[in-house]
Length: 143
Image (tube, rainbow, N blue to C red; front, side, top):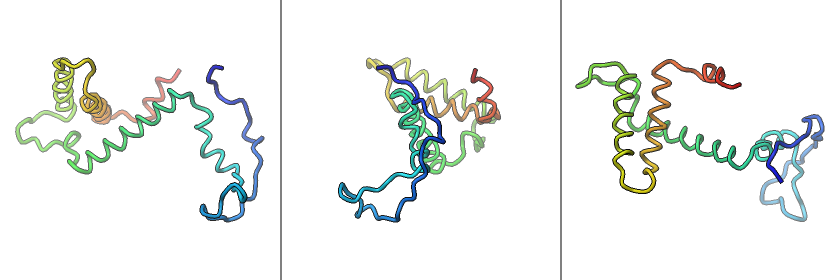
């Protein structure tokens, strides 16, 4: 059976009044009935194919990694200190991408290192930011 989106209308999900029950009190004999709000919140688990779920998962992980690195190392990619390199942030990111791509090309293993691929994705994201690209700009590429 092919993975396809469920065919239903939001109005068909009943609104159920859920009594306040602690997680400890919910068990097979005393189940918690799910509300429409809960169903809507978790609807993506039904609507996405396994690959689409993996895309969401990896991109969520990349978002968390980028935010972590930005907190840890500061905003040096977008607002460099310009101690040695005096160019703008876009060219600085392109130089970093060159270095990372060179590392992938010189790798003798069968697959590239996950760290190098994650760094490339991160630098590509920062490159888009340095170019002033917004999520609205990216929506234009959706056919």
